[in-house]
Length: 350
Image 1 (cartoon, rainbow, N blue to C red):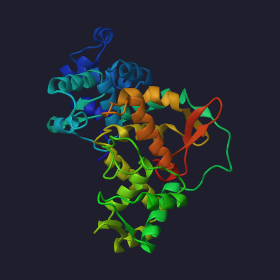
Image 2 (cartoon, rainbow, N blue to C red):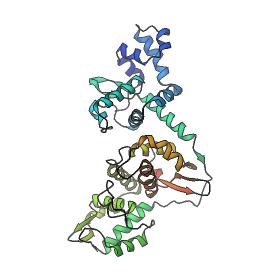
Image 3 (tube, helix red, strand yellow):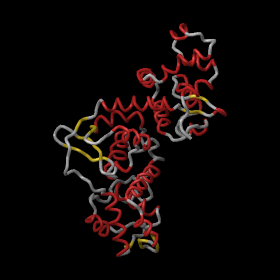
Image 4 (cartoon, one colour):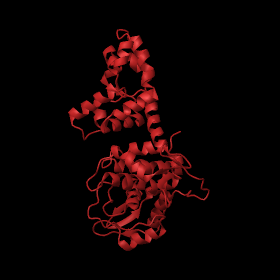
């Protein structure tokens, strides 16, 4: 079901709800006893980019996160319980205040059977608002014909699988690879990682505690798909690995990215939102500074135990996008940032 049209949504509203959306000066200029006049005055106001930007900037951080999340959500109608699922950390009183804030500012409307929705035109203008803000910080980069074109996460996934098809590996009592075997695999990987030394590593996957960030994602993904199995202190590839050999590249890339979102979202609930924002805003031959992204995205992120907001954005988001080849890192004497990577063409919505 597509997003509802704003005109239909306004016509559905009670007259008193429409009056709440008017500015004080508009109430004087409008016949508030006429629903038709109310709708005619409200419609152009609610889809005006300057109005949307102004109202959005006034929202609290939680309301901003909710408004943007709903802009990228594919569901047209959501119940109050489903909306609450986006912000489970909020107390009921704070959640209800946030709903009131969003409805009072014209970002959220009640509809049939007490469900809620964001009209399609409001979604469009709010996304434009965010894209324009990001565009202000976008740098134009020279074309790099010799830039990275390989999707290394896919190459390295095949390295791991092919290695195990040829030679099952012994596991320690803790069920992890021996250091020498891990190092042998790393010699064939595009990204060279070392085993983590941090005492506290949790929240981002089944084997995140034992393996470095990128390798643990590849390992956990393959285990999740049933392509590798830990049996009797041995790590082996299974017959189900034939599924991998039959997958097309776009399908495999999308599958890995979807798995990353699911794996990280308990510790990082807004990872999907940040991902949509960046994909919606970054184009070929454009770059964004890491410093700006940390500042801009911080209001949408919460700390997770030992991970600060900056850690969440750099380690758990930007670095993972680099590992997934969705963005490429650019670094020189005056600029540290990211630009479009080779995976993005399979992910960006048309």
